[in-house]
Image 1 (cartoon, one colour):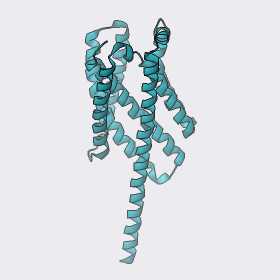
Image 2 (spheres, rainbow, N blue to C red):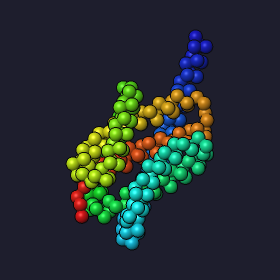
Image 3 (cartoon, rainbow, N blue to C red):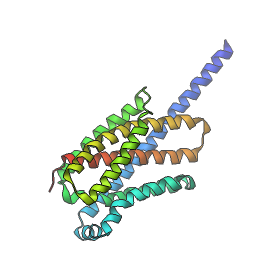
Length: 239
């Protein structure tokens, strides 16, 4: 009986340690993501309110570099993450967040500041609710992954094609589908980040945990920023 109590105590202690580690891990994910979001919007605001810089960045071929730079950096990040230290990966993420800010800086020219703030608030509430549900639900939503990724690839292709077509109808459809896809990804990614931590918690690899938190922050950051942009296209008031 005493041996059983010892085992039960040890099991409970280990479970409590994992729960505490998970909370710390998720706090690092959300904290890193939040700093990235702050960098993005500060950069977007600074560039968007500088007419000379906007004329330089969004004229001619340069605008395509500005538009596609974040996408190329995401692919590059995924390719080199295993070769980087946790500190280098975090720095890369913050640089990426600033580049994303430059890429979306046009919103401060196209949309009113009030509508940007309103859509940001709506996105924040929706994101918080979806991420909380993904974290707390007992339902396994891992099966959503393949469908959401397929939808995301289709969305990227359609968005690139519409850059050259400039069709408002296609843009409207992309925005509607985009909101649904990134809403689903927010819940899916949150649960996946949680499950990934739980699967590796026993290894106590601090370097892996650091890089995993940054990758998790990047995933949720992309879900938020894309959902925000889609909602802004749908509901933003133009200047």
